[in-house]
Image (tube, rainbow, N blue to C red):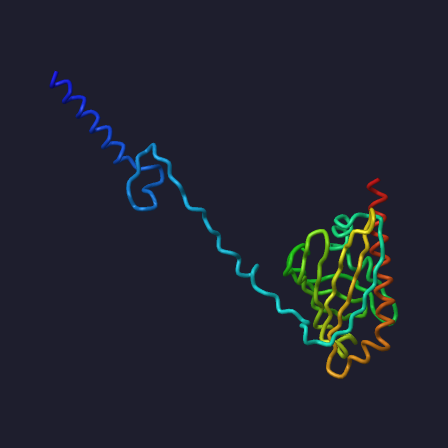
Amino acid sequence: MSDKKSITAKGEAELQGDAVARPLPGGDDATGRTVPHNATSRKAPTKTAPDAEAVQAIPLLISSADNTVCITVQQRTSVVPANAFQLIVPIDLARVFQRVAPFPGVKGVANQTEAWDHVGPTRNPQFDDGSQADEQLTEYTEGSSFAYQLTGFSNILSRIAAGVRGEWNFNPDGDGTLIRWTYEFKPLPGRRWILAGPFAPLWRRYMVAALARCVQVIEADRLRSE
């Protein structure tokens, strides 16, 4: 009888020792101790370091200290904001920015770094008078608004403005959308009177024509989808 108890006790001790000695698949636990094979392991959530480029702040052209000149145009469409937004953000600039004297049209885009669907990408709009500008997407709120800044103009704008901030807003308007588009010019020293005076009505006419073409694109897409 005592021999049977001795064998049983020895077997249980070996099983317990085997359980303690057997590591989990993948190794020891976080404390450095060997864990029984049937124990539950709790892994701390893995933290992924943010992409340095993604979090890097974009130097903004305009601050609250600047005495800017704003020109705003707006137009309505029967399409809901989210759909209008999706059509306008990636639109072919040459299709809607056509020449309205004395301003050139856009003939294309060069050097675009990424898809135009998040903050950060840059590109160079090419104008039909041979000039160009540097553009960067600075704000992007899916379905409702986006903003960009234009600098480095190689045409007449380089003589009167340090750059421009453009912003598009897509606001609910009944069953459709009220699109509001603003160009905010940062004048060069001593040039604000030109931007606010003779320049403004000419540029507004240019914007009205471009926005009308944008709405035509939106409405044509709606008709195709019906």
